[in-house]
Amino acid sequence: MGWKETAEPVLTRMPSVSRPEGHVPFRRKLGWTAGVLVLYFFLTNIQLFGLDAGTQSDLFGRFRSILAGSQGSILQLGIGPIVTASIVLQLLGGADLLGLDTDDPRDQVLYQGLQKLLVVVMICLTGLPMVFAGNFLPADPAVGQALGIGLTGVQTLLFVQIAVGGILILFMDEIVSKWGVGSGVGLFIIAGVSQQLVGGLFSWEALGGTPGFFPTWFAILTGSQEIASPLTAEGLQALLLGQGQLLALVTTVLIFAIVVYAESVRVEIPLSHARVKGARGRFPVKLIYASVLPMILVRALQANIQFAGRILNSTWNQMPGWLGTYSNGQPVSGLFYYLAPIQTRTDWMWWLAGTAAEPWQIIIRVGVDLTIMVIGGAIFAIFWVETTGMGPESTAQQIQNSGMQIPGFRRNPQVIEKVMERYIPQVTVIGGALVGLLAVGANMLGTIGQVSGTGLLLTVSITYKLYEEIAEEQLMEMHPMMRQMFGSE
Image 1 (tube, rainbow, N blue to C red):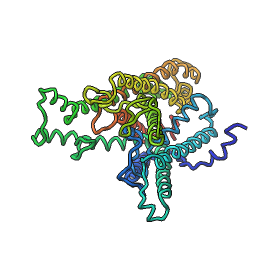
Image 2 (image 1 turned 90 degrees about the horizontal axis):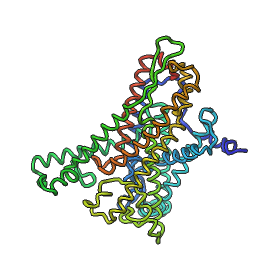
Image 3 (image 1 turned 180 degrees about the horizontal axis):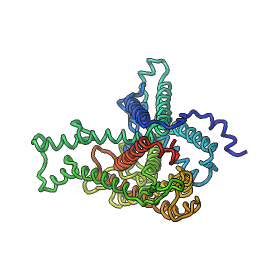
Image 4 (image 1 turned 90 degrees about the vertical axis):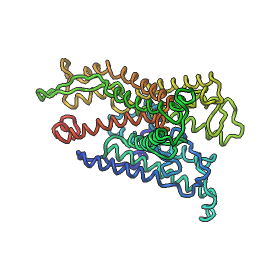
């Protein structure tokens, strides 16, 4: 008996959000999406009961903008368990160890059930160390005394709350995917990064030690904030890297422009309908064909490595120096230092930041980060395309089922697949590597609002894709015949 037969009774009974039986009107989709977004913001503001807020430390740290959620809230884990479960499934599926055919309805149910089960496992593996190890989510002893459950009881209560939050965000993502527009994971990333970005532009209070861009320049221009002359090295540095944040503004605008341009670069394969004369279309193979979602998997993998390092450092009294030496919760030497991604300018500008690391150590760290992001981006892009039905074979079958064909070629799935193989694999690798390169460059230069470069990159690309999906939904709503033609009914 194989693993599928053994696990089927459990996996098929995993709770799930039912799919709509027919077409969901566009307005209703927007309603579901907006409702989930409001619920997300609401949950990020519900603080954990029993938490000693004065001594907590964010275990995700600089990865927070990518993993969404909010430190100390019921959504403490954010989308971390969902993304980590996806990484495991992508690797198992890429190595063909699952033996699941996602075109088979039965295997689809097993795959979705396995994903939910893995998310629950990841919630436990991530949440338990946060609560019971180190000082990341410290329990308040006063609450334990008041309730008569002791410190361990309060810790258990904290874990139950963040576990419930992890389950809620799993089903919120499923609701958006089935009943709304786009994906819940992308929506939550947009929500979190947008908050930081708007705050970084307009906030009068200090964010990360620096007020917003416009309030800062208002103070500079009105003379209420002094700044050194830009003709001096000190003044130029203050304008570009310090109070003025000019380099951060340029990087932010540049990321917007590059991503929008890259999303518009595509190879369009002409299509014509086999039965409806004059009905023509195009299948676009974008430069960023796999989108930027595989980049979440790469960064989440790095986040989990750093997560393990901080847990080991907090629980292992004599952790070997070759593994890592920590200062203020961040690795400053050892293996975990070299595996830590470059997040800000201070991580690599040793001549300005005065970091303890030697220049050669920083160069190695930058090289490792660049290698992981470029190669990892390409690999996960390939996995993503194959597991989401975007590969040449699946695409050819979709075109065949829609009644379309490539002019000048026989109407045969194998023929269409061969044409797709000329473009999709190459574009997938190039696009994945390009996104990885952009993410590292954006992190090194810094952005407005202390947003990580990767977070901004993801937000711009996901927003652009969301705009395209909304435009497509509106088109389908205006022309019902198109839904029947492309199988959307």
